[in-house]
Length: 239
Ligand code: AMP
Image (cartoon, rainbow, N blue to C red; front, top):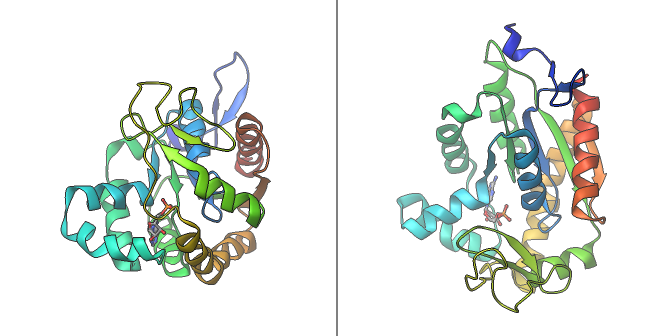
């Protein structure tokens, strides 16, 4: 294993050992804050966030063949077929910025996707195994987060009309752009997304738990505290 792939590298603070992040999976039900936490970890570790939801929405916006297929499925709150999502992730993982690690946000969401990712990582000669972190938040809190969520289409900042409102209602604090609401952030679609989560993604959580490369963090806390909790479990699992 080359030095760039050792499990421990010199940290930012003099003399402190910080584990290389490597591949990190952020798991959890819709609305637990995977995207928000991924952005915190990006700031901290300088590795890219790979959100399959964001990549799919970009395909929808660009009107690609994948986007045309995914649009209605996403609108119903169902999962896009594994083969399409895996292929999209494969293309993204082939980019050089993923070499030191990456945060997969919203992937894998099925056991087929998890098996595909495990196989891909196992086939690599160097590199760290995945660490999976699940964020937990109770159902009623999730519903509030989903229906209150607004995002800035320009800088991607995320707000919540209940928990984290912008200073000026409806507009981004950073760049003043009008905030948007995702088409699938309604109560009806949320219920279907929760069903898809329980049926297809909860088993993925159990898969990584059984592998011993898994930790769960409480997502009903301030953003910085949750991020610190994730960093702590990643450091522990990387030792
Ligand atoms: P998200 O932004 O992660 O909440 O994802 C929004 C929607 O995109 C989901 O409800 C699914 O329809 C689709 N999607 C995102 N990631 C995946 C995935 N890994 N597998 C299948 N569908 C996905």
